[in-house]
Amino acid sequence: MCRVLERCLGNAQCEAVSFTAVAEALAWLAREDADVIITDVRMPREGGLELCRRVQETRPDIPVVMITAFGTIETAIEAIRSGAYDFLVKPFELETVRIAVRRAVERRRLVRRVRRLEDALQGPARQGEMVGRSSAMQHVHELVARLCDVDTTVTITGESGTGKELVARAIHGRGARSGGPFVPINCAAMPASLLESELFGHVKGAFTDARADRLGLFAQASGGTIFLDEIGELPLELQPKILRALQERRVRPVGGSSEVPFDARVVTATNRDLEQEVEQGSFREDLFYRINVVEVAVPPLRARGNDILLLAAHFIARYASAHDKDVSSIVPAAAQKLLDYAWPGNVRELQNCIERAVTLCSFSELGVDDLPAKIRDFRPEQLTPGETDPRNFAPMEEIERRYVERVYAATGGNKSLAASILGFNRKTLYRKLRRYGLLPPES
Image (cartoon, rainbow, N blue to C red; front, side, top):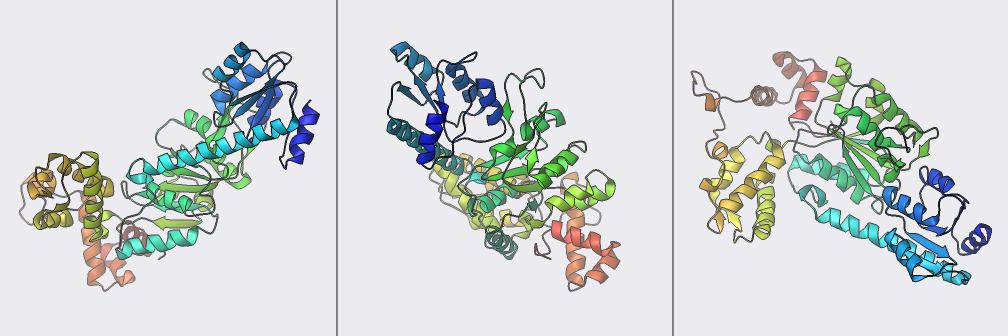
């Protein structure tokens, strides 16, 4: 029967592989991908219903077509409850199998398309739209456009809250892999042992809770993009394994004896200075050079000028609709407050500020009183001689940013002179200028 079905599907331009045991099929699925599974109900040892249940646990995106000679209503109901997509009864015409396979493959494509659309509609960082017309953001737009036609590894740098994931989604969504999955993971969100299992997958019995084989995120991202956010937080002991995976394009599941290939674009992001981390020994130099093929530096919000008002208008429209409020604009005095504020939390802080303001606003325009107190009371020059009010002191990083910006401007952009005045070497000055949005990304 397996040989007959392989020949039948081969004639229909499908690539088919067959197994005569559930364990063999599951072992293959742990390494490879499939568009549809056809299985008999009754087989030696484990049967098709058990296979269907296991596939639902580990690969729910793959439709399963059940074939049986025992075409009772009870068997059909049990198959559907196990997660089967379709149910065929022997004897059957080969054309019926071809039609069932075509329908199952088309269903999988539709499910993936719907999921991508749902992802695109969830939250500001998933909309694939980078709002901004400032010169700092134009450099980012241009670099993203150039990266769409190549498949190289990209590292996105920038302060927390600047929208690094949004840039990653733009690179994915505008490239040749846009039809595949976008798989993000925050490397700082889980301990090393769990992170390894999430990235590489695991086999049944690899640890206490491993009740079934699980495909890792690298393999799940095949055909698309895997986004390693906060890669600077990777535990040092896991970094050699990530490096080998990127070089070999294969991963070994936890507890497994064989490797699983993957074909995914790798995009990483960090708010850390990885060059400094390398110098301090907390990040591997070879991994740094492997991921930092192309760097996209996302500027902080304070370096984006009138983009602040563009983003504010964008968020006002969104949250006015979400909260059913008749708010459409912002008064000039409140707009000036937004422009004056330093935005240490960047776009994320602005988004939260506008959502709060829209929620509290009683009129059609946002006023100064609708803004949080720290923004209403903020003064551009907070540090003055003889200042004693603690509310008027600035964080050390903000003081450094202002001083670097003033010295750089006063020297007319002369980096050697600016570095000499600041007490930096040129390499450190370049890092500071990039971090504070004072240099275009390609510099």
